[in-house]
Amino acid sequence: MGDRFALLLPNGPDYIELMYACSMLGVIAVPLNTRLSTKEIDRVLEDARPRGIVRHSSLAVPGVQLSWQQVIDEEPLPIRNDPAPKVFYDPEAVLGLIYTSGTTGQPKGVMVTHGNILADVHNFNYWMRYTEGGIYLHAAPIFHIADFPGMFAAPAFGASQITIPKFSAQTFCETVEREHVTHTVLVPTMINLLTQFPDARKYDLSSLQVLAYGGSPMAPELVHRTRDLLPKVKLIQVYGLSETGFLTGLQDQEHTEDKLISCGRPCPGVDLLVTDISGKQADAGQAGELIARGANVMRGYWNNPEETAEAFRNGFFHTGDIGHQDAGGYFYILDRLKDMIVTGGENVYSGEVEAVIYDHPAVREVAVFGVPDPQWGELVMACVVLKPGTALTADDLVAFCRRSLASYKLPRRVEFSEADLPKSSTGKMLKRTLRERFWTQQQRAVS
Image (cartoon, rainbow, N blue to C red; front, side, top):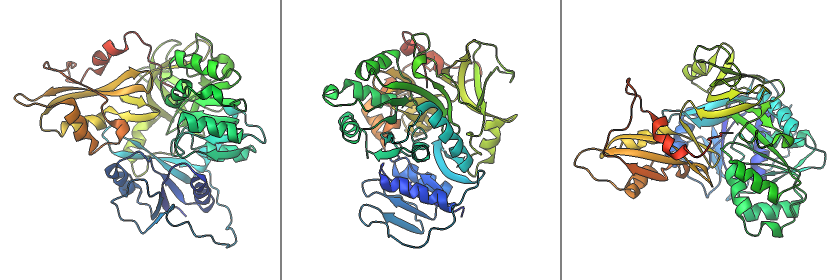
């Protein structure tokens, strides 16, 4: 009880069974992002210190030595017929560590408790409205907070679960048609691929009742394309963080033109406020930081009391997101305090990418930020100033970064500047100034 156990697996029934086993035994699960590099996985394992790991042979081999390791597709897990132990449940006990990179690139383990998951189960059903006999499809990665609670929500309300190892529009359509899927959660990148799939209308997708989406900016134009492809499906937008689970939702009937860039209203039992720079609650329409409290908010960061204290002030979790609330109670996310880039539903912290680029001997200064992209929501862009007398190409810089970063964190656009990058009077990089020319014609709605 209290031991950590890591999972490095694609979506599959084994994943769900192992998660259930951990929760029933009081073991803390450590679901690992399958897109991380070996170096990044090792940093997580060094922090979590799990006793063992179950992994798939197609994924990176950790460099950290653990007491026990099993490659699940080469040697099946042993089947035992021992009587099931008494089921463990303590709402304050940690069920899982969901790792998210810090602004310095150091991993932070979000301590998700049994009570957090129970709250998320209720929130999941509040927005998704499961019915007995429903079929939930895990199309997004289970290790991602957008899909993680679905493992527990589906059986709680009588729904079966189907998994696909990796998303593609064709696999999604084939699975929905074959298994009569009724509910699923996707990130906008997946929805974009689905709506652009030329054969999508050849499949019978009529069983699909509810499609929830979140984790990335979603343009109103993409919402319209989704409506055109799936006219009878209820669309639910959800907003949340690894640290909080779901905070808000925008119901299907609320997807009106004036609300499409809103992330909706708070879940029942969630207190969500916008505060100004002094910490006072902001007026309607006034931008400020979103802060939250509720049964779904994490216990803290694993082995990181300093970051935990910084995140929790006056009883509220500080999200690091800038937004405002309108007079009708709807929230709008405007920007990320921590310069986080959301690309394809994955969070990329600019400071982590900058730290890697600064390691290149030719780089004098760099600023990393997100620029709009119709497929991925945002792309990682790097503006670079080289040291005098040096030379570097964009391809060479990306190849340099590839040694230390997951593929989704790599700069997709690189711009070299002969002039110094803009800074404030205190020397802080003015990324907003750099972003302006890319976002001038678009609203940046982050969900």
